[in-house]
Image 1 (cartoon, helix red, strand yellow):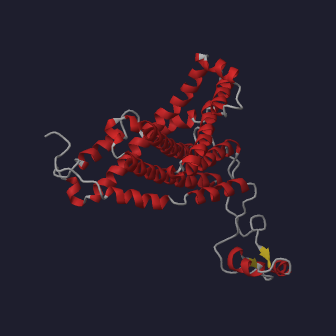
Image 2 (cartoon, rainbow, N blue to C red):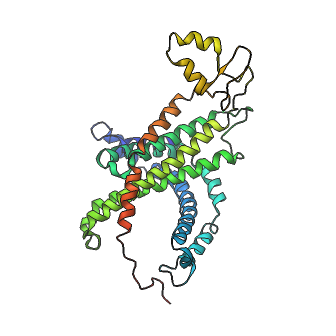
Image 3 (cartoon, rainbow, N blue to C red):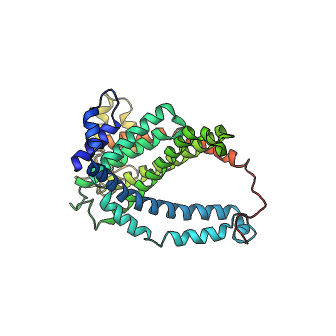
Length: 344
């Protein structure tokens, strides 16, 4: 049923004027096909939720505690932060510690049905960004595309010692990819929750009053979280894509720097090349002496699409810090009630 499940995912995401409605209805009516999709998603979302929520939650509780100083570890502190912080440490361990969740994700996140759905989520986020750019959906979509590229690359790439990169025992590869995936799943869900609030909030009397201000605040937080997730994904993917290549050395096989005579000859065709090489890439002099520099030059042959994607994602972070400033200012307007929220 895997091929049919992937077809159904594509049909669900296609434009109404282009998709085969008869085929869509046929697949939707097949409970086994729908089960294949739900099974692939649950096998990723369940460990991903446990991994990210408890781990990141404990980190956030620590920061909340530190904001209050010594007052934060006392029973008089509003919110009983110290108790919640201690609870967070326990939650990160019981019902499967983080390593177990990463282990499960390393097996389930390679499912072709899940990867097809993940790619469709990225396309859906592009559409969301066209009408709600303030959510950070575009940033997150670019990060998801980078993660997919990295996953496909690592499944076939080998390290400098000709060792396979993506395999079960090599948790230095699989575990960071699982962490990056969890960041994106959480950020995407936040974006979808904000859109749900925007759509259905006016019909709910509890949230209808002041809904516009709440939505603006939540969208800024979604933008911040999407940017934060994209930053984590970019860092992890870059380390995995480039980190297992051997760094070039000064020997003949590894050094790609210009010979001084070559640089001088090319200067006539490319003005400024010689100065740039002396300042950045380095020039090997006729006597073998090297000018002071960080080391032999690294080249990115074969990785052009990844570097272009990384540059694009960095540009997508535009506005994220402004959103964070707006959200931070909004928080200063919130009054903490004197009454403690835990019963005595």
